[in-house]
Image 1 (spheres, rainbow, N blue to C red):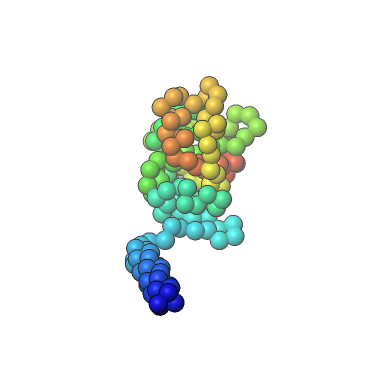
Image 2 (cartoon, rainbow, N blue to C red):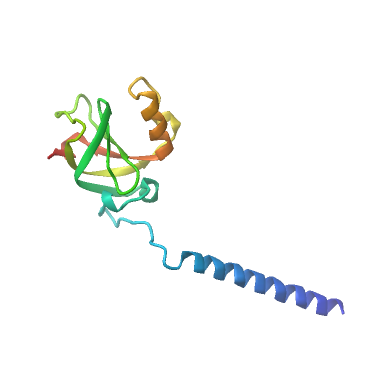
Length: 148
């Protein structure tokens, strides 16, 4: 009798596991996978809903609209989902001035960040909160940004 009970428990456990796997598969069926980039290949920023999905990869933007410029070496652009923070990498002052409404083109690396990324006087409080909430930003070398 005990052996029969153990066999039933085993079979029920297998059925529960199979149902859980099927539910997981059905839940992802038809869902669009996040964009990915191959070795060095950049994903179009307009196709990215959440920048955190492509951390470690590269994105490119062609004619993205600058929404605001709250920092000397950083600005917000329109992305595929929420606005995206673009951080300019430069040893000094960047060789151009970006203003809200400008169109920019660039290719950069997607980097995850924590709350310490916004420490310092450069970021206004509201922008710092939004940057931290985003969880990732795009780092672009100054030479890789084109206006227009």
